[in-house]
Image (cartoon, rainbow, N blue to C red; front, side, top):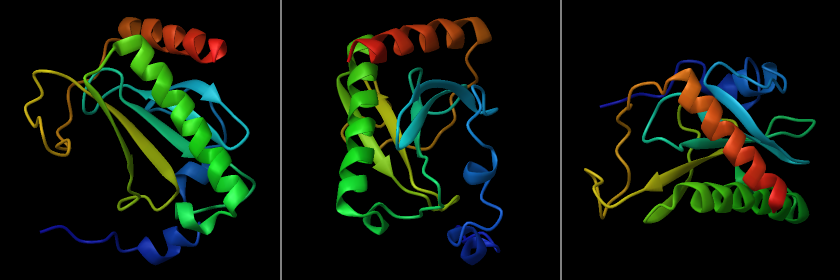
Length: 155
């Protein structure tokens, strides 16, 4: 059985939030930025789930934990940017299905996991299992990131 991080209440308030504190880097250590919008940034991840795994992070001038904490217009704008990224992932990787997951259980900063699903998924028919697939090679990551950036520029 898991447990909430000891500093979860502080993190919910934005105190020590890594997603707020890291600024807007092109490489956040976990992945490469492929999209920078008015309300979000998207990072193609080095590892996790499957190739093409992207995390879209809410970026505004304040810390936000939950989607419902946003005013309606900002919520809609954030979600439109998430959908734009999901379309680019779909167009480039041609998955069987896309899962969009808004969790924040470990780091309570609004972000959405864009997870591509495919025909031989070990967990097909259910939610994706958080098993970390090994890191991508830097060359593969950079090629995919460039392709997603081009796809997002078309939209």
